[in-house]
Image (spheres, rainbow, N blue to C red):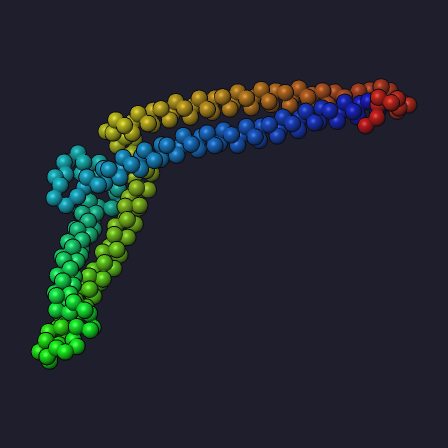
Length: 243
């Protein structure tokens, strides 16, 4: 009966090691994820800065144009510039419309300081003037709100295009060449590679030690059940043999 006790203890040791391995796997995955997150954040920031430098009115060097085409083969610089020009144009219109709203509001306030009560006791001519100012204010506000909607829709389109470009740039074969031109990003990538290797090597060593312990206990367990039949025959239980 003592063989069963020994076998039980060996199995517990094996299961404990397996559970430790799973826990170690999770911890290692979390560390590697943190390293990868830093790489992604740095890469996105650098790509975003590069894309932001491609703006209407900015001089684009031949090297920047070549790198842009390599990073974003499905998104031409002309299309990106056109998208920004539309956003800039709508923003300018929006600012003008807001000035018209402010002017119209001031004129209406001057003509009708008491709001709808301002028409009381006024002549038809004065009432017509108040009505006209009110219509001007309403028209200006309508134009302003329309432009706000158009501008927000355009910025969403621009943001969507930017997201597509960032993903394409991250996955591009030209990304490593791009990183070489960005000292800060290059430094982050080199540090991340070193840290990634150190984390994985430490994890690998811990797991190999654990596997060796499991292998040893498995061999003991196998040897226990391969004993000659005579040695494994039942015997009377003693108090210490209880399971």
